[in-house]
Image (cartoon, rainbow, N blue to C red):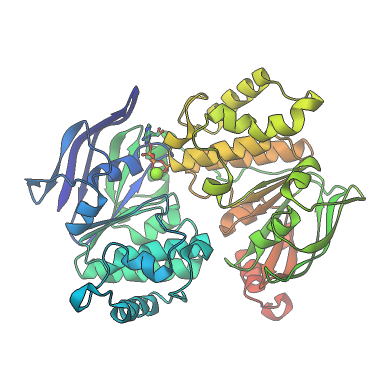
Length: 496
Ligand SMILES: Nc1ncnc2c1ncn2[C@@H]1O[C@H](COP(=O)(O)OP(=O)(O)OP(=O)(O)O)[C@@H](O)[C@H]1O
Ligand SMILES: [Mg+2]
């Protein structure tokens, strides 16, 4: 239906696309895969008129096309859900849905009633519980993502492009999304689906195109290929055991959290210990309160708690105090809380490290340079240390946030969904890094919604259900079943 042929694109000296070919067929889900920075988002931005290709052609049913911008693409039936969410935080859910396409009654009066009706019907289909008058900025990232998806589904699109649509969705939201995709596919709609989640791709995609370093290097039918083959095409080598072995033996308690509560966040009486050198997983359904617990602990949100580190009481009233006392927090909201986008990679990496430690003489500018170079290489960040972060791909920006917080050499590193949106090769490098850090005595709290990751990397797992801890599992008890039982409010003894 649509084909892109020999697409070339450079940004200044940076040759990003080097002759990419893809074909979007009717009534199919085409997955687009590749490492962070491979050029996936750029290719889709070219299709939808955000950027113009330097060379190459785009054909629709053998006729050359070129959309002027995303709006033009939309009007021609190509909807694009971008990786960076395009929500207007100060507008309501309803206003966001119909922005620029308001329904009008006679005399140009906005027809709120019929817009509300249409929105509610769609939300019901999507099993979404969203208040139409709520400000979009108050929604969780996951809900904002569902709102974007709703926006795209509401147009009568023939092609829907989804750039990492499920990054912040719960499993049940993903199920509903996939149902909708399959249904629309049978009605003749085509999808381009970009994701780093391999299981998802093999569940939803009919065909897969893999890009590497700006070229399309493999296209295969999903049922005629394997995950191994796709990974090899993506990173150019085989990848054995995704989760490296850990050798942790139980150590003394480093951090002890008692009676952590927050009325505003619905968190009640949370107690847990974190041992020296331990990776403590935090599992639970989305919205269970995992991130909220950490936000209170880090002084970002109000609450009550008693915290001890090495048996000494800590006062944490704001993030600054938390950092001073050896905590670091990589939030799930990395775009907003993580980076100064205009600044360079090295400036961003050095920012908190220099602030909190330079006086103590621990870090100098030249050691920051070395450290940044080392991280760029290890995490395979596609950029030079002096490049501005605004031009980095989504996944590469996340790697910079990681590098920045690790540089502060905290005693306790809190990671919220550390590998979301990160490609398989770099994921593995992050796991290695976590192992190294804990071997040097750092303790890590890792919130993750990917069960294999929680099980593969944690020494123990705390399961959160509706704002309180429903159980703590030892390494030997770590199974998907046990975690899910606790996460859904069940009781382990009954399950056996
Ligand atoms: N506006 C821009 N100016 C300069 N360079 C850019 C710009 N947009 C993208 N790039 C560069 O193009 C390359 C490809 O980026 P792109 O966002 O397409 O990657 P991606 O495959 O979508 O990665 P990810 O999986 O991390 O989202 C990156 O190296 C990025 O730094
Ligand atoms: Mg991208």
